[in-house]
Length: 152
Image (cartoon, rainbow, N blue to C red; front, side, top):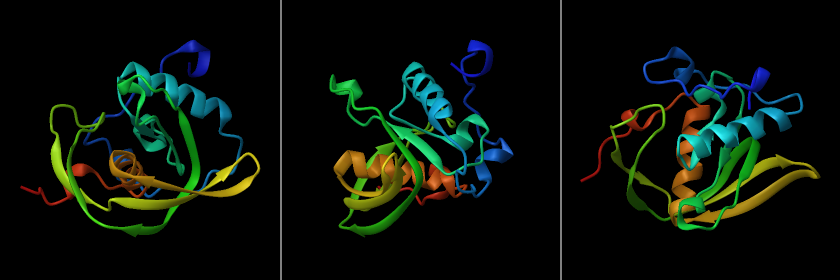
């Protein structure tokens, strides 16, 4: 749970770290990712990007289904959306912008490439999970839900 067992603090808008374009992860992110998952579940959220805890690296954690009773903690290191299709609109909330949910248009299906323990991987996400991936990817580029035009 963070250094010296302290829960990671989630930064709030307008903290300037939230606006940084993150750099690639070069070291071992295992401990940081574990601590980020603990903070995400405690928040309680479904995704958390490294800049939200003050680390400007291309890393995010996600569990799109745990609130439905199906825990699936995931870690994405140096992720990149390599394909997308379709369109969906959903209401999104953000742990860094509490109380300001916004309807956002996103791709319905995304293919994400990311570094895994055995090398570069690709995985396809649909629906809510695809929206979560895109939301967290935005954080890695300094983009917040407030930057998206609201969709009726």
